[in-house]
Image (tube, rainbow, N blue to C red; front, side, top):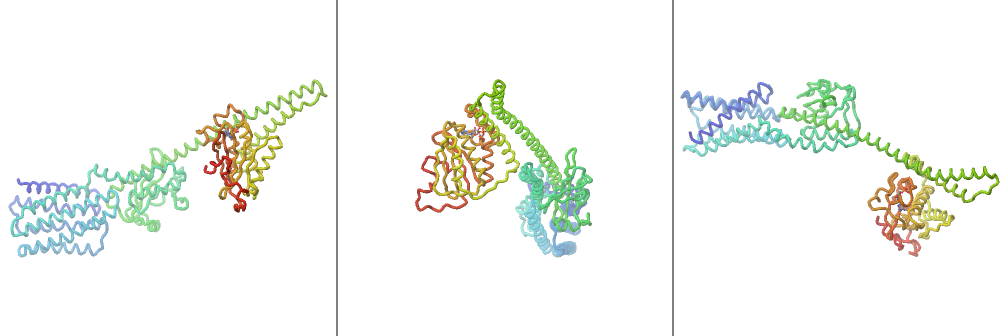
Amino acid sequence: MTALELISLINQVLFIGLFVVVLRRALRDRTAMSFNAALLFGAIAGTVVLARVADWLGVSGQAGVTAVTLILLTAAPFAMLRLVDDFSGTPRWVQIAGGAAFVGVSVLATLGFERMEQLVEIIIIVFFVAVGGFAAYAFARESRRSRGITRRRMMAVSIGAGLFIAAVVLVLLAALLPVPAPGLGIVGQVLALTAVTAFYFGFVPPTWMRRAWREPDLRGFLERSIHLTSVPDDRAAILELQGAVANAFGASGAAVGIANADGTVLRYADAGEWVEFPADAFIAGRAFQQQRRVVAIDAATTDPDNADTYAASNAQTVISAPITTDDRRIGVLSIFAERAPVFIEDDLWLLELLADQTAVLLEARTLTAHASELRAREDAAYLKEEFLSAAAHDLRTPLTVVLGQAELMERRLARDPYAPVDPAGVARMVREARRLRDLVTELLDAQRLEQGQILMDRVPDDLCAIVEVVRARHGERGITIPLTRPDEPLVGLVDRPRMEQVLENLIDNAMKYGEQPPRLEIGATGDEVRIAVIDRGVGIPEEERDRIFERFFRASNVQSVTDTGLGLGLHICRRIVAEHGGRIWHEPTPEGGSTFVVALKLEIPLIPAPDADSVPAWPSASGAGSLVDA
Ligand code: ADP
């Protein structure tokens, strides 16, 4: 046996094998596409078997045998043309012309081959090139339009069709030549071998190949949808999930219906709102009710009551599958396609896989939501505990002093009702009672600010004047606070009592955590007023600076200085400044200690003063220059 004969034999066996597989599929599926595929491979296998049998019987070359062989062979491009129609649809006239050409060529081959052998062969070659070539081109075009596994399978079919046509044309050309051309024959057989392999991958791809082809679609879906477990808005998450499903299929759309607790209503995400339908509505409803996938190749015929809805969604074909976990019916997943899927078995498989993935994603979302609810509750409980222990501790100290002092006075009075009043004791009581009041106010403020209950009454006011008032208040108590300020007013939109509270708080802190009173600077930069409270105290450890504005946070280095403090003051300051549309921040004072800066918008822009010295430019020359860039 020569190499040529061997390849030829392999080709024949493979084409017959392919025919058997495709025929079995056609008998099972009973779709137009599977019958036309069976016709294609039946025609090829028939040609092969006939040639073998005729050889064996010694009747090769007889007129009848040749005619039947030619008819079978020309049936192949005709079957391809019909497949093109199944895959992508063709104008009616193309099918009629193709059918007529097939009948014409068959009649010619039966009646005229004996007399006009060469002419008939040329006509057959033209028929093959025209009809088969068109089919190969149409498959390639359809492949470019499709996605994922369909694209790959279509491409394989297109390559198979093109190579098969080329192989047959080469063999026919070789027969036409006056001298034998074995080279053409070999090339033809090699092309046929490649063609049968490509057809195999296109029509009955093996499982490993299917898996490899599906992989990118699945990965694409997972990449697009995995983050959805943490998207807070349910509707946005569902809309995005639908986009990912539609994309994985190359479908015109997808819908995810989520069932309510008792499974009577399916809720769909629309662009603007949720829409609800009874759980048995639409094709999706059937899939949900029956808990199995439903394929409606022609949705309008399957569910005529909702034909308009399907038409509006460009959904000629609808495929739905239930989204279910082991013990819970979550909802239903549907895809809409403008026409029936080419390789429906792959799409069904993918749909069910995506329905499973969707179930996992939705369950994960529910769990994530549940977990964050629990965490929020735990956080709240923890904060409450923190708050109670901090408050109890801080209120206890001044209360003990007040009570102790009062009991002392009571005892003295009992001993001697006319004893002179102890001024130092009374002063201590007043001081500690004030501290108590301040702590309680701080607690209440923090709570009210948290609940948004404090309404700011902001009016245009001079911030220099506000700073002066606070400073004067300390002056009355014998505390001199150095101040650098411009002569002109710096007007911002402020709630005066609240802004005074911020400054008092920063100054109190500076004195609490530093040995001397701080110095104050106020100035303007661009359209901002900046007030700096600069101390030379203990400072704040670098790693804790980010946290000092948090509720209840106290830096680790202050315990040794003072153990009183709720860790609420700065938090309140930040809330108040934020309510003013401003910023507050901390930075270390270059010589050691802390600098707190409050920046607020200037309500009346600065008019450059004729005498530039009268409004200190910010940064000032006093050393706090670096704060401007914070
Ligand atoms: P507290 O009641 O503890 O003073 P604050 O909210 O006012 O609460 O301050 C939070 C923490 O920030 C303080 O406990 C302290 O660690 C730190 N802090 C605030 N101001 C200063 C400052 N001027 N110098 C050093 N540390 C400070």
